[in-house]
Amino acid sequence: MGWMSDENGLDKCAANYTPLTPLSHLRRASHVFAQRLAMVYGEEHRVTYAQYHERCTRLACALSGKGIAPGDVVATLIPNVPAQIEAHFGVPACGGVLNTINTRLDVDTVAYILRHGEAKLILVDSQFLQLAEAACAQMDGPKPTLIEVPDVAAGHPASGRFETYEDMLAGADPSFEWIMPQDEWESLALNYTSGTTGRPKGVVYHHRGAYLMTMGTVVSWRMVLHPIYLTIVPLFHCNGWNHSWMMPLIGGTVVCCRDITAPAIFDAIADEGVTHLGGAPIVLNMLVNAPETERRKFDHQVEVFTAGAPPAPATLSKIETLGFNVTQVYGLTETYGHVTECIWRGEDWDALEKPARAAIKARQGVAFPMMEDITVMDAQMRQIPMDGTCKGEIMIRGNSVMKGYFKNPDATREAFEGGYFHSGDIAVQHGDGYMQIADRAKDIIISGGENISSVEVEGVLMEHDDVLLAAVVAKPDDKWGEVPCAFVELKPGTRPDAAALIAFARGKLAGFKAPKAIVFEELPKTSTGKIQKFELRKKAQMLD
Image 1 (cartoon, rainbow, N blue to C red):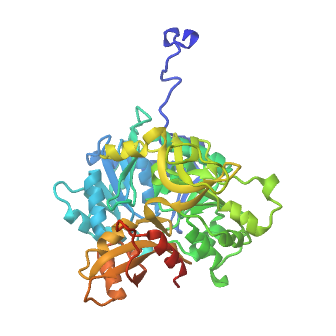
Image 2: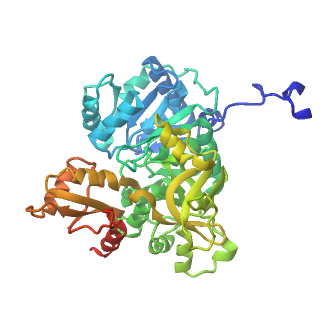
Image 3: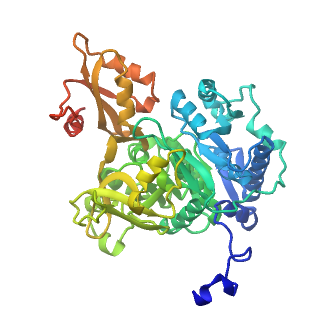
């Protein structure tokens, strides 16, 4: 190797190498942006970067004092409020691995995640205390310590049964020394997918991937110093697309939004000067369809990342006139969130009519800068023709791809076969390389940005005594984008009762997973007995 050899003294040392971690962003911001506003929640919670860093330090100290050692999992059941954001730094700052749990899940699934992830402690918003307690009661063996996070202003005071988050922080040392990763491959977060075969899989993030995601997002979102970001993307979903880890990098202000409503969003834009937000197409629909009484005027352009499902071109066209510039992005839990973007080619596309512009903006686009290669391949992992017609699977390679599935080496090997992450999403690729999703593999339904496994819903419906067969597909919905629609074949001698069957499903599933419509009929099948879901999708498209 000649002059590149370590023998010539060109090896890594403390002066020239530091493991990449997003923790570095907040440590730096606490000095560089010490007195700048870091976080806003309502009228009372307005903290500077110096204060934000101190609160995260106290959290790290408190967790360490409760026995959380490097590599231990700390879970949360919290909406988009300050404690959830602070956990993104405080948990890894004591060496812990952060597991943000979807607050919309059912008791059984939460219990499974706590058990499978081996959480040692869980931070729980008072609104979800009953869910957490019920989940812990289902667990065999060790149960996580529960710390309650009250939100009095939102109508969720402390129960009095558990130590509270603020009391825990008050008793902690603000000079605690952060435990930084010795290796950037160390685990940072554990996020559970919605699962394509029922049980969710645990996706493990590393410090390097999250750090590079923050860097790539700044470039792709054309961000400059001191943006004002509104937290609409749930922080339990890909850690809010890593935006909490990113904001200290550029001295931005995070505006917390607990309940996602049109008035809350318009108020934040008008009163706090929000410049950036992310959200599923359902959020765009909500803003477009908000009555005038819920809107506020503002005189600046708001940059929006949208993902979770392809947005309707009509929605994209309408929202531009309200002062929003939308960029379509795409990713998965396994890729830390967004890894492709529909970069706008102004010189080519600015002159197009609105419908044509909106159709292009609905594409999933090309790779973010921190990714190595994202393209569409056929079943033999060959590049498909870029003709906008041929279909293949989106394949992903790059630094912001998960370490793998926790305790599931077989699924990890399958996902990484051939040196790419297999997304499971079916797409076409246009002549310019821009990808566009054409279908969803494994029949995943995306409702309000949340993935729903049709297999899981079918399994619950099949538990009903009257059901012979059940098939669940996506039905278009003006509000949620897609909702589950069940086609059910009943056993002989039984009577159809859609309301009773939906109620049965809701008793076993999170509300958003339960079917919103039931159609009773004999299911179409192949000669081998396989249900022909493509026929059911056609029917679901025609339903009111």
